[in-house]
Length: 381
Image (cartoon, rainbow, N blue to C red; front, side, top):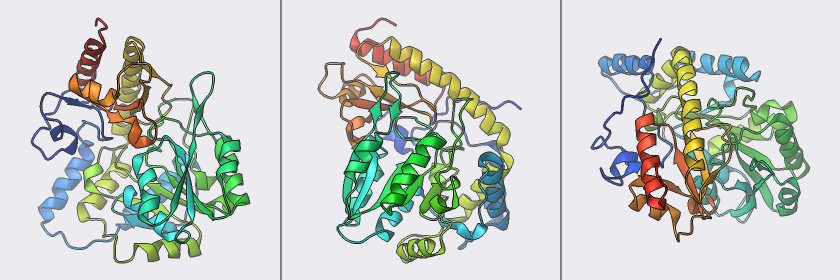
């Protein structure tokens, strides 16, 4: 079955944060929101649900719970109990609940930077100290964990590790060996691991696969909160449906208690879309991965032709992490915005001088954006 990822869709004036923020003269390649229509099965399911006409409070359909359990078994060889699932209206709220639930005022939470901005913001919102441990790059420019530095950063009052896997923005899909080392550090220091795995179904390298942190073994699972959602994979971020998987009953109860009174229910359309995405949209997902792989190649080739920019290999996600520190401009994000391309500012991720580019868009949009970027730095197209 053919799916159209190439025909541009005019999103101006549709209430799109991505497209309306900068106006019609700027191509937005910033926020992690793809420009593709949702899978046909999702659109059809939403039409049927809307035709029903009643939108009361809802619970997760049994079929959705079942398909998640089956999916994790088939894709990741991870056996979970349905009772471990805690439903969320989004993963940012899930991160904040974890920071609220684990530890006490003044405790420290450690994370690996650069990282998705809510990781940097959530600890302070809940009176926790943020400890940043920078990732490093090897000789091939691959971003890797500095385990010695991580160990040295942990103090007696550190209570949790916030992990992003696959890692946004650097595009790593961490290996089982890396996750096992992380888990051993967490165990030796009695840390809870909150693992954001929202990009788990967006691994682009054919020789790699996502490894859920909690799937390593039972002892790791007992200290892990795993956050997942269909929103990135199937381009459903505005429908607000995600979930935490928490195997340990006591940890799950702490998490649910921290949610009480502040986290709303998932809405009916969010559940409907999630079920249709996971159950009926496998062919669409396969076609998406092929398209994103091709776009990744376009990004790498284009960046190589722009003076002052470098990009590492992107194992997963539809996000390119671009090093613009040699560009010789005060603010790379402002510089390219003035040229008509909006990118995410690396400073928001804890890395000034870098840029995050969302390549979940049409070839035409991507090529036009790079034409503008080349012209801005004086490179011919």
